Image 1 (cartoon, rainbow, N blue to C red):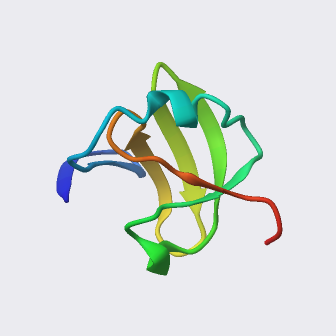
Image 2 (image 1 turned 30 degrees about the vertical axis):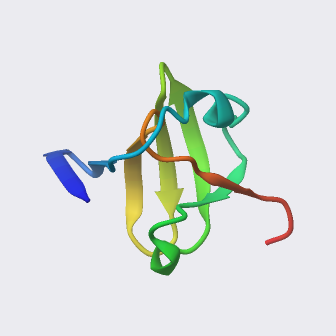
Length: 79
């Protein structure tokens, strides 16, 4: 995993992978998600999804900005 710069209270994380932007395009503010490579982060709530950058507030790590082109977040329908 490559970690980007720290921008205030949010962190930028991206991982090598395929273009996942189509799968993440359904994510809207308020939806619950999990990061498939970071199960210890717990469930997170989508704060925004703008141009493939998805801001998620995770219980265990706080606010994280995900590169949706590299990481396919998993929607959680039954927390």
